[in-house]
Amino acid sequence: MCEERARMLQDQFAVSVNHVHALAILVATFHYEKHPPALDQVTFAEYTARTSFERPLLSGVAYAQRVVHAYRESFERQQGWIIKTMRHEPSPVQDEYAPVIYSQETVSYIEGLDMMSGEEDRENILRSRASGKAVLTRPFRLMSDHLGVVLTFPVYLDDLTADAKEEDRVAATAGYLGGAFDVESLVENLLRQLAGNQELVVNVYDVTNNSNPLLMYGSEVPLGNPSPSHICMLDFGDPFRKHHMICRYRNKP
Ligand code: WA2
Image 1 (cartoon, rainbow, N blue to C red):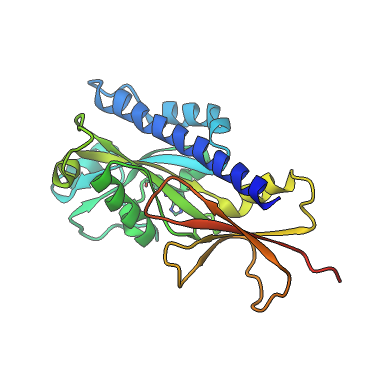
Image 2 (image 1 turned 30 degrees about the vertical axis):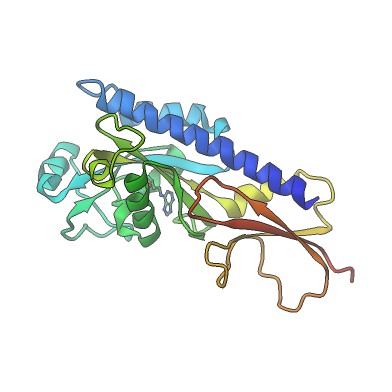
């Protein structure tokens, strides 16, 4: 029963990641390879709403543009708003920013916010653009106040070869396409559909640091729980992160 749940979660995760990858290519194609850009917020919002069924575990996706400080003023003048932090304050001076310029309506509250102003989002941005790959944060409280993880894909201005150096990747970075895996509410929905859900307690942990497992889904099981448990490995596609699922039968009263 644990294997079935782990496989289902991993598969739904993988299809969601694949579709975000395709959205990163959509932004590269229509925002950066057309002059003037053939994409705007209304089009992005409509397209992402109509394709949300492709991303069953994501509460919403967005595109944050890379803005270096020298271009901040002209960027803000052009947009007609100023870059704000994730605490909704005007952004202090930084070397660079990652303000959201396109968002799915379900996460419209991140529009205009510098995603580099949040520790987890910032680490994701830096790691994705250095590697060219999809990356995941550790589990944390999203802005929705639900426990989840953020997925980030880099978008580059030029075509890069698979063996491109890190400094060339950073120099060619245009922005970041990502989304929030609302694990707390969307995994609940997924598991509720399965038979025997009442008897089984499911927890998912980020065990990247084995000595400090981080709860990603479920409620913290009290230490010394006597009921036998089953552990399944999970692969969410970011080789830097390790996850597993623990299932136990609920103690009969
Ligand atoms: N999206 C939605 N809710 C969040 C969040 C986020 N990040 N961070 C905290 N709560 C646009 O990596 C680029 C999305 C970040 C992408």
